[in-house]
Length: 204
Ligand SMILES: [Zn+2]
Image (cartoon, rainbow, N blue to C red):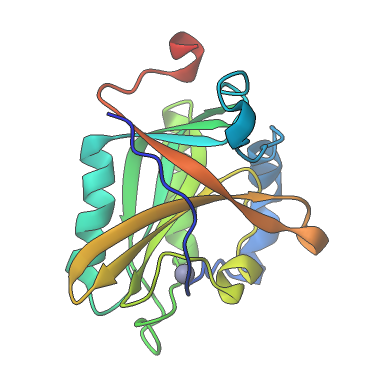
């Protein structure tokens, strides 16, 4: 089952504190490993392998959306572990996190640094890496906000946003962070739901 989604619209953020950012420079650099290209509709077939795709199991996809509903009317947030190759990321594990923006959790989120570190350690123990983050937009479209972009620092990683309308998960979109810190941007990417995720090295 393949579910293609284009970018839509909205608010949100990955509140990784600046104080911990330096600790993640090395990991983030790893995330940049690949140049992610935007999907070219006119030549999608020949560029299929190079296009930006987040491959995720139906169970994990549903978990993200369930988290979004469960957290409503607050934003949920979490980390996606997996492997990446070229413009593809294969999600293998979701790590639900606590939104520590209790002052404005209805439209902001921040993942506690210790949970990011724990996720990094978990990923490394699995010979994987952090390949993305997810959060929700209560009663807002799944479009990244200016704050989302400002607070995003993991180049080459997916940023998945689920809109929740009156408590029910609606659209889920994903964007990949590309460029450099001073000229970064989000590019819409495809979400491909796969039945049985396999390591990219084998799948390809
Ligand atoms: Zn957001």
